[in-house]
Amino acid sequence: MGRLGHEARTAMAVLLKQGHSQSAVARLLGVTEGTVRYQRRRQESGAVDGRSRQTSAVAAHAAAIAHWREQQTGGRINLAALHDWLRREHGYAGSLKSVQRYWRRTFPAPAIRARRRVETPAGAQAQVDWAEYPGMVLGGEVVDLSALTMTLSWSRKRVTVWARSKDMLSWQACQTGCFRRLGGVPAVLRIDNVKTAVAKGAGSWGVVNPTYRRFAAQLKFHVDACQPRQPQAKGKVERSIRDQRAALDPYGEVFDSLEALQAWTDARLEARAEHLRCPATGTSVAEAWETERALLTPLPETLPEPFDIVVRRTVGVDCMVSFEGRQYSVPFRFARQEVEVRGVAGRVQVLKDCAVIAEHPRGGAALVVIDDGHYAGESTDRVIAPQPLGRMGRRLREIAMTGVQQRSVDLYARLAEVAR
Image (cartoon, rainbow, N blue to C red):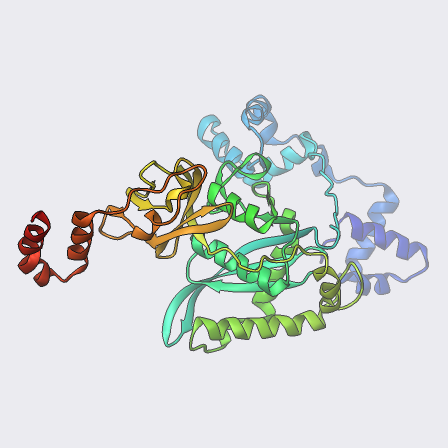
């Protein structure tokens, strides 16, 4: 004999009242006719389940349970933990089910917090998130890859850029690749609380990573970090990643390189944009994106190179700036001015007013890196040009530029010639 819940018993009463036979109701509810007959007699006689009148064994520990409930600070109540605590501390021998039934009868369910559905205007927002793809086959090698997905909130246009890591350089390079594919930059980028974006804290109270803040300022977008443990706050990109895993599964393909994987992904996403519909307009995502693209901030003619470190430094009177334990020369006309120093892939860039004024190899053995051209040129109204090298200085520079063997043979002779 099957069991009928409260809703099924209510449906049974309505169907019988409408004139349906007991056998027909039994077939509709998926139970035997005897079950319908039994439940009908109980309803007509006004019978009450005797178990509802029984006192639960858990009630003897009501004071202890109330005390335990007061100790819980936020989050969900773990009744399994309560059951374990009652068994250890109070010798309770009942089941977890009995604790759950007592809790439902004694304490009301918490109020439901309604969520506000927000549809952002065109060009206002894009949502960004990483997705992990371990064990990918790339060029005959098994590697772990990451994919950065960016979805425009209005048109639902989505793009994905692949990377081998999730460090600061990859974080910026992937976002730059996404902006290039979208044809512009949205006003706001909603992101997760990854360390490459949020240095401390989370959500609205988080401190944006200084390097990433500078990157955002250059491309003219605002960083909007989600609240922690609130995936619905960027549900559009979460849905995009879930759809991508189902409809664009790269594990079933073989790729010779990361570039081949990227080209395959771009082609598949463009085809999906033609097929999917935009909820805001009812047209295809591709058509809605054409409208939204005109409202995005245009990309600068020269996109900034990804950088993992950015600091502000004041140029010394000797035209040098300090960075990563080394000193690098800067054109003399910037002496005593504040400049921006960036660490990019393999190089150190020095910028003033967003323009690169000096560039040096990064991370070499030398602790002092000098470009003699930075000391040449005419004086300015603010800075007098350094004195030119004398005969001794020119000879020393020529010697430094020669090979090691030549230097060891001619060093004494050249210095002697200068001394005469």
